[in-house]
Image (cartoon, rainbow, N blue to C red):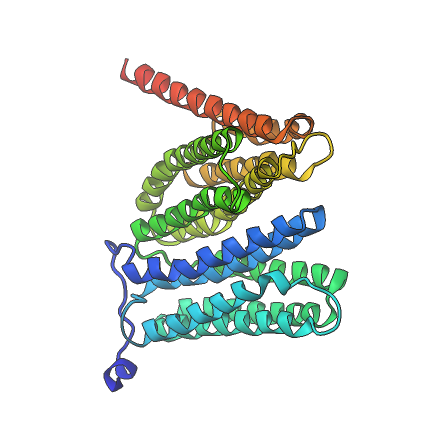
Length: 396
């Protein structure tokens, strides 16, 4: 035990890859995503979608700071591993109280304060370990001090929102998370967060997108519950798998090109690319995927209860097509910031998905899911065809 506490952080190398412990760390993040989806599905409304978005952003920041830390030092050895394990418990606690985070009435303040305290704990650990691991790097330590200042400042509205609850909580938490994310952007512009291993960094973000895509498949079981599997439910499940596959292929084709672009850069340019294309642009990818999962769960729940979710329900259509639009917008941003090349179809696709929302609202849930599948398959086919045409044209 004494050896663990005497050990120094082990710096990563250019060839460092994702460790098993980091994948294990992601398990609590998966639990958090499930809790957010469950929270929104129990009270589907515009307010709940907004509340869920803020909690997703809080979880994303919690994950991002440790992905940067894991790129700088090995988090699976020595005292760093012990600290990250404590942070896992804090993330787990945050996820556990998410359904009660927005509750109002007597006795609800305690759950909100538990969430804030757990979040502050995991952030303090991340900043402290990063500062400790950056010994000898004066520029990075200045960056960490600047980031720590904005982080601590963001805790004030976060704590006040937990105390007040209601509408004040929504507004104050939005301010808090904006300050938190903004502090990361400012510190990145100031001197950059070094990306030591581009392969590790790209791989970590690709894995978290895959984790989020898995939530779409989990939502099938959550929506059906213990109901007997009938033909429409089976068809909806197959369509959900098709949607998930399309989203995966749309992302993976972008991720490979972006990962190569990250490897080709160095120094401050690599740091800015990592902060912008990955830390910032991957959040809409994650949030959009979770909204799609919410829409799938709503559709499956309606089919299980033999409801159509036709003209009387906006939420399934907004979640399905709005979530897809958010995912595609994040993907277009990811490409524009990494490979700095975006095709017209990739730019138009998010807007097209938004325009389909009124159409999806008029359709039964199963038909809306089929329409989404068709649109994504058409987009994927179009992009595959244009890439092959460009390859053939370049060869000639």
